[in-house]
Length: 270
Image (tube, rainbow, N blue to C red; front, side, top):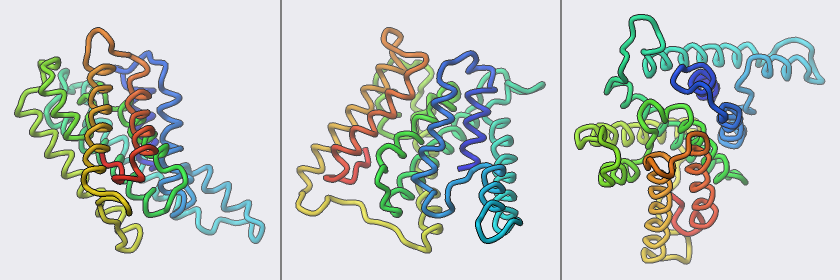
């Protein structure tokens, strides 16, 4: 999540394509909300060397660093990785870089966004988070704001299909859509391996909650996937109703609504 924090900061507060904007604050804050509930149960959720060092040396039993050197090392490595990924997805911001967004940059953006989304889902479920829907929605919102101007920030094969079939995105070809789906599915697999590793091999099954059948699951998954896809088309694709500053918040809100309303029935995959 230190990687996610640094990466979002670079994309919403530094990237030329996103300046000026009014969403940088909520996008960066959203990372903290996502990580605090997703990873807080594992590591405490510092995501900042200053926080890690301050907490460590102020502990009542000692006034010298204990755990913070390891935390700081991990966080600095994450910052360097974020800078590297930023250069890859936004090479146009650097001298000699491609002026047009490459296919590789688009696919990497879809991989990173989907990875952080699925990782946040898994960590919240395994931690039995009391605010899972909000944390997951925040991760989606932040990565959408960070990468929307790179790939469109679909992070979901259903959304990619909706954008393709809508005919409102001329640059979304069948070949590109297929590449997006491959990147998204690959990211989902790696994210599931990550949260399972963090929790020493634990995972959780996909299926109806107790007391519900496939009919109820089908209704919930169809309706809330429809809602999510429709909102994406309305606020990020349509030239009539698109929102230059609220698009990430609107799309993330769909996950909050669906997670709270449909999660107890189907698990809220959407």
